[in-house]
Image (cartoon, rainbow, N blue to C red; front, side, top):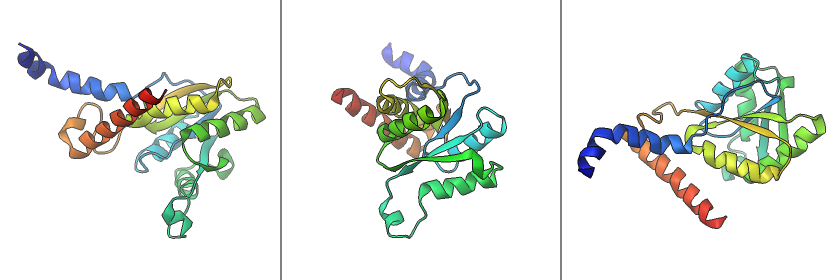
Length: 191
C-alpha cells in the first residue's frame, strides 16, 4: 500500500522536500535588497529586476572574506563582480552599498546588516537568495541580527537548470538538496 501511495504521489512528495528549504515571503516594498552570493547566473539578475521594479532603493552586498583565488589576485572580489553585473543591469552605482569587511558567513553578514540599517533608521529588507539555501540563510541572518528590529522578507530564486518541481530529474538537483538538508540537520543539532 505504501509503495502505491509513494508511486502515485512521488512528484508532490519530492516537490514538498524542496519547498521546505525554500522560504518565499510575500513581497512588499522595502528599504534595501540584501543580495546573497548564491548562484551567479540567477540571483544578481533577480535582484536587479526587483530594484528596477522599485521594491527598494538600495542594493546591499557584503564584503566577504577573500577566497584563495581572490587573495592571489586571480579573481576579482565577489562584491566587485556583482557590482558590475548590477550596473550592467541598469542599477546606478550610488544605489549599491557595500557592508562589512572580511565577513565569514551569513551570521557575520547579519551583524553588518544590523549596523548598516541602524545608521540609516531603516528596518525592512528583502533578501535575494537561491531557493535551496533560503531557509538556511534566513536562520543565519536572524542569528546575526540578534534581535535587531529588522524585518526580513525572503525572495528565493530558482536555479537555471531546475526548480522545486523538477530537481529530482537532475544529478545536480539531488546533490544540491542533499547538501542543503545535510547543513540544515547539522545546524539543528548544534542549536
